[in-house]
Length: 283
Ligand code: URA
Image (cartoon, rainbow, N blue to C red; front, side):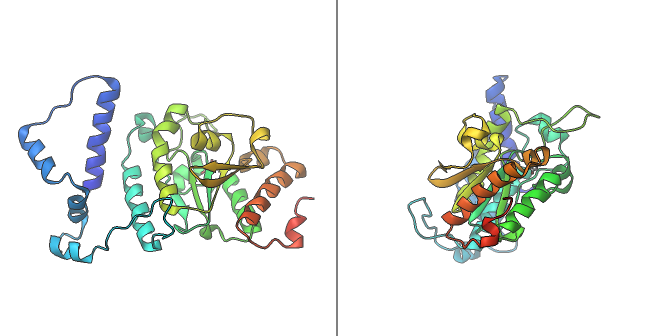
């Protein structure tokens, strides 16, 4: 097991012990001393480096750390974002915070797309297809989302796509369909999504459906009241629209048009040109 995974497992077990109040965690003096030796993130980075390179070389190679906080206008380079996303993905892969999901999933479904994306789409949770393939939005709803993205003028690879939950919500063996994530599952998984957003720093987030809104903003309301207007997620403009699965259930052109109007607002916000043909889609 890699070091970050091992650390994540230890932390998760400690958190579970605390939540369940079952027993007090204890560690021997030797273990505590060993943990103290590696407790700074700096040392952890060195430990994660190539085993053949000396700590000195690692230190030499590392760029000076910069403040990329919300107020900063300096965007981290793409390679740095890729590395940071990979580190979060590693922790997600090893996550067992929801034991029922950890044991039922085929794999975690982290997210896909351009770390420098201007738009980030956030859905609910992986379905059966996503659980099988390890990529969000690859089933029927995903294919429709891909069509919407293309109609906006982007290849799918240029945006970033993620879900509130990184595991497929478990369903009883032999049953079909999906179940919505529970509030507790969403709360547990939310920090990973926050990290993804923090790293990617998209110009616009699109929340797909009421569950995504609940996961991001913690609010519940009917979609007809939420969609089609600008909201904000920690300062990033947030557009709320219907989940593509809703459009598969309600095939009427008027509902498709609503989603399309929401997407045109996104394009306008990003100062992207909208052709006459695009303006008339679903009319
Ligand atoms: N629905 C979602 O919300 N996410 C997926 O990844 C697939 C379907």
